[in-house]
Length: 126
Image (cartoon, rainbow, N blue to C red; front, side):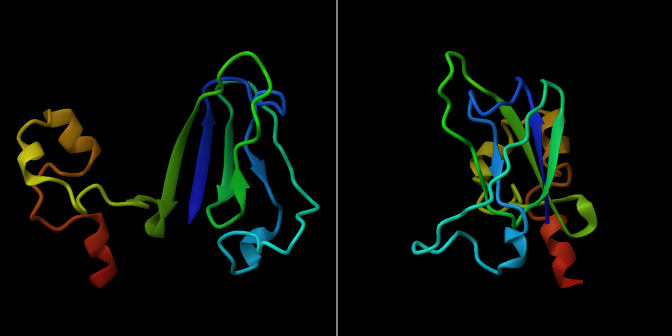
């Protein structure tokens, strides 16, 4: 699994840019145990338009924003074959909403063939 964090604003420790714990993806744990003090935290800095690429299992979180402006980001989550949604939009999508989608929205969510057709998550079962 791979995650991307697209910086829509500059990222810095002042505005709470994303923090990561290097090597934590190898721990097999989703979060640090309560009795563990995390000693090595990296906080990448970058200008708007930059992207951070991380293993999706690495411990990561936003920092505290102590500045005077908001920090915005766009997250991309990828898994198997690098083209599949981490959370498939077909799963639990209300049927009554489908007809309200534009053609472009259906394309972006891989729903051009409807909700009942095979989609990204189905590739796991081939």
